Image (cartoon, rainbow, N blue to C red; front, top):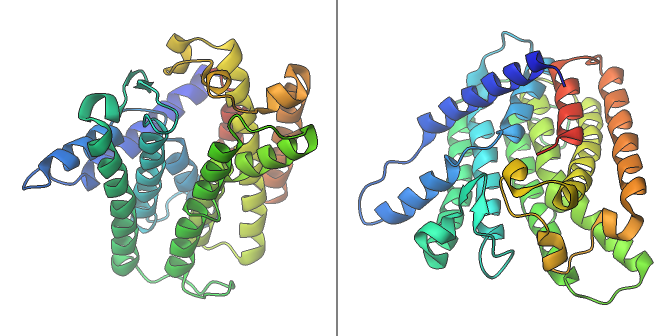
Length: 312
């Protein structure tokens, strides 16, 4: 990946950081400690990939000079949801990780109880933020989906992809599959569900919300959803690969967690060679979808490639 691309990505992540800071809740009152824990979690760094993807998808459909205020609250909400999921993932009752993004996890700093509340607070604040954006946002053209209001359509996707029919459902299947004796076929079926939902759902939602708010029609939103599914699954397979071949310094979190927690991964079920081949196949298909939409060689296309073949 070129140094020029990395510089642009860093700049875009910094832009998201600025948006997040503008939406941070004030740390005051009787809820001060949970607000501190929420802000500690949200500002822990990271590449801000999901909001970056949402902003890029929006610009591709709405135009480079389109009003970002339309999509900004949804991009912030997406990062809040993603962060809450990481806070809860790291809890002792789940993955029990002490480090995330190169520093102590929220429960390691504030305790498990406060970290649980911080995750709850971020999830609810995400919907408050997106709803506020929908209420105050400028009027948009009608959408040709089941709901013609683009803000409502975007809110529905945000809620659905983050819930039991998306990320939470994937997390549930992930927990239930730990140290469970399943035959290979059933293990592969469960793993496909986990990867599609636990990882893929928020990536799909980011791209779809950007497209809907940017003026895309139902058919194009479906196409960008499929691209997001491919990227999400490939992203997770690459994560499984890195959990074996990377280092804590590179990854910013402990390696070998999957093995420690008895999790089936694409690598453990299919082998390293087939895992890498699947990443390539999914990547190429995602790129072909973007090409069909007229977005070949866009920043989003290069971002997909980066996400899928990243080293950390």
